[in-house]
Length: 230
Image (tube, rainbow, N blue to C red; front, side, top):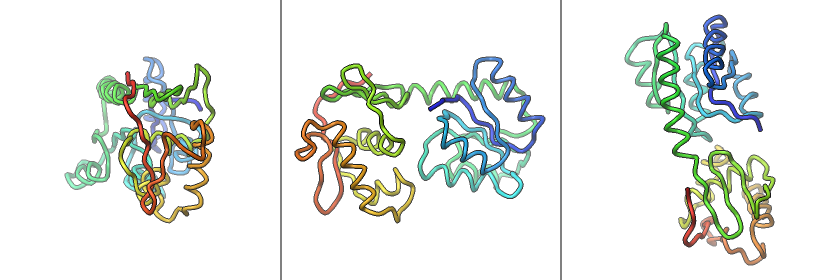
């Protein structure tokens, strides 16, 4: 899946295109969309490390998009808007925004802010966790075994990475529904199917799992002893 440093979600075409071109010129791989539908379509097919999000987006709003994204993503979101009231700034930050940048902005200053956030974000997630013959790169989102990539579907990867990030802690089914699927009404059957598929890919004996263990009546735990992280 292609990966971008930055996604701009803004319906001001001239400003967005100039920002996108400027960022790409200086090595910040950026794409621009103008509305909510295009934003979510893009995120289904691409990975993004940071989102620049306008508030006023025609039929939708950046606030609405941010709330939906925060159900399943911790990607940094920087609001960009001509709205200057304290209420707007506080709302943007309280619903999950990482910063609020007022328009008109300087391209140089905006890019400096973006690069700073990207550096911090990538350093937090550019770690590899090893368990048994496997290793998972939490930034590149790859699972490897004996030097070969193990192909995972998107939701399988999200489930596995969440379990690993919370290793040795019992995680309830409700928490997995909320944090992985972003949906409290996801059926247990769906979760069970994904757990079984993961076990088939990483367990020597899926019927007697070493890593993904069931905590009856509660949920699951990813058991890991001494692991290697870098």
